[in-house]
Image (cartoon, rainbow, N blue to C red; front, side, top):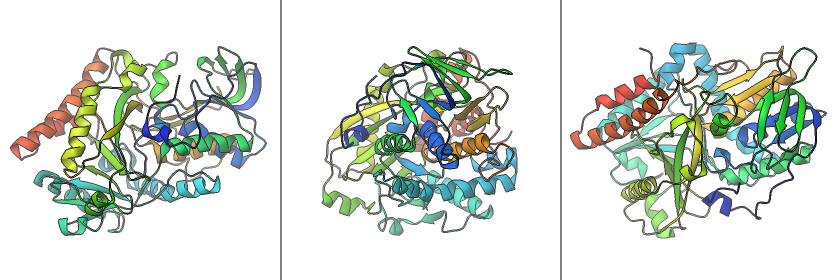
Length: 466
């Protein structure tokens, strides 16, 4: 497999060539399946806790081939579940703790990148969520009000009136926006590729073009084992960090639903454009529509812009041909030009791929000390920060299993996701959800009032308790 044809990969300092595949049988302390953020942060954190550990990373393509190397570049404190759902499931104390950890992790990622001498174009300018209708104004103001009632300070999330937007960033038709400082812009490919190199400097062995075909759980007197075409690895612990590609593994088809998110990028835009549009602190941006969009101003003054809209494919199928959907690319470009009517630059890059969505929208970190099997993932598009947080939880659970840490007490640690429904129910449910989001946006834009579809969408994906 070749790296995706994304903007991010074109910015790397040198062409990507594959590391050698596994061609032998090994016996190590930890074997990690997946060379994305989760797997590489886990290897790094394990080495930081115990430099003597022998660690192997097995990647079926090249490190960063999946979502880690092609995402929207938001290092944010966002979480897939809404605040109300988290509080209902786990209580206010756990919610506050989780929020605090995620917020602190945003600058911590920048610190870690600098520590490892990684030029990932990290810049913490925060994020703007624009309201482009009165309905969106009402929803976002309500969100700010509820956040403040739950103890969030105005410095953490606040409402900006239209006049204040010109100090940060402006999109066509904005009636205002929320602003949170807890987000940074990154170049994900530079981060993940640099992280792979940093792991090798720590002594981690990385084998690329080494697709895993079988995983055997450990039994009394027998370690767990990972099998590839070229060799196998026995280890005290085997960590699955495969995110959107999890359904390609044996007996994992209902574990995660691979949801496709696509992106485009423009050519570098003029200084005059940016003087008018703003985003001088590289704030990431979105609006409050139901069908998610996300964007950033890149280090070389392009706009990288993405969104959902591609259908879920029957049977949790993951194929490279699904990475491109001309209809979605056309809608993304139209949306971007609607947000920035003065933008006259051409779109130069189009790319996409799957991300992992669990049935209950909650990430999961699991370590079974009896079988030696461990896993982390299920970020539903919020994985840049969550992957690093989950990696620290994994490292803590493996190196000091009897000690509770700030990461191991997070709500999603030891959380077993409910499996997705069997087909065709899974295909119907996810694509109905996509249709509801599209319908809700269309109805709100046409009628100027909230759509019942948004309520049904929240019910479908458990965003608030019944």
